[in-house]
Structure formats: C-alpha cells, structure tokens
Length: 192
Ligand code: RP5
Image (cartoon, rainbow, N blue to C red):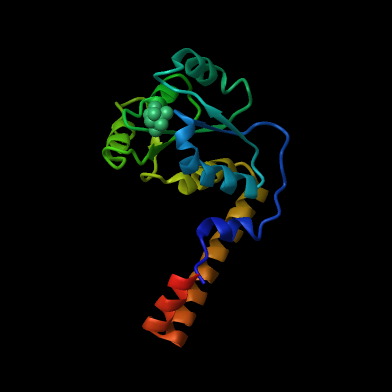
C-alpha cells in the first residue's frame, strides 16, 4: 500500500498547538492553495501554528507590503510564500522583512512551473529566498519547522520522529517488494 509522506506525519504525531502565529503561509491566488496545503498540514501536524493568507504582489500589492512589513511585529518567525507564473510574491515579501522567506514555485498552466521557479530562485544578492522544488509545499513546511526547531527542542524531537517514520516506511516497502516480487508489488500499487 502506498503511503504518502504527508500521511506518515498526519497519522502519527499528536499536535501541541502553540498560541501565537508562528509561520505565515501566503500565496498569490487561491488557485495556489492545493500546492500550499501540504505545508500547512505538515506544520499543523508538528504543532506549529500557521496563518494562511492570499496576498498578491500584483493584484493586492499594498496589502502584501503591509503584511510583509509588519510580519515580525505580528509574531511570525518564518514566511512561506507560494506563487506561479510571474511569481514575484516571495521576492517582494523578502525585500520587506528580514524574516526567512521560503519560496514555493507553483506549477503554472502554460510553462509547467519553470517560469515560477526561475522567477523565485534567481534573487539578487542581498535578498535571499530559500526556494523549494516546483509544487514543493511539503518541503517548504518541513523546512520552516526545521528553522523553528533550532530553538525548540520539542519540535526538534518531532522532526526526528518524522524522519524515523520515513525511514521505517521505506524499510517496510523494501521488505514487501522483496516478498511479493515486482509484478505483484506493482499490481498492489495500482489497486491502492
Ligand atoms: C499568480 O498568478 C498566482 O500565484 C497564481 O499562481 C497565478 C495565477 O493566478 P490565478 O489566475 O489562478 O488567480 O499571481
């Protein structure tokens, strides 16, 4: 049975929700939400409080600027920013705050997200954005948690548990593949 990485976290960790907003997950459009959802889920499963916003660098630039400029005062420690196409949101957010910004290139309809990736990853010196893979919402959430875990030992332990679960899941798959053989394993995969 195929088990997603997200499910591996969701099924086993008991969340300990902290009261204050910690990670802001912002996106240029609500059409980006499916890509950012794995980041939100991973963080919530790890007990990190998340605030989710739609803030467009092009359609609501003033609201986007206001949020980015006040994010630190509002108590956020890390910003995840996802956008597609001419994906200026992560870079613009990063230009307005010294909080770490993780950029998520959203797979675009016309250019499959290569445009988003190039727009986000090629930041000029001085204004960094930590860019994950196209549609890499899960890794953005985990990277944000790893940044927070530097000063949060209980979160660090949860991340260690998560890594152990990933390890155990792959070991179990390896054993099952050896047991069933290639054809039967693929049959089970295609039916699950
Ligand atoms: C970007 O334009 C958004 O981040 C989104 O990925 C893309 C398309 O937006 P919609 O036309 O779907 O609202 O600003």
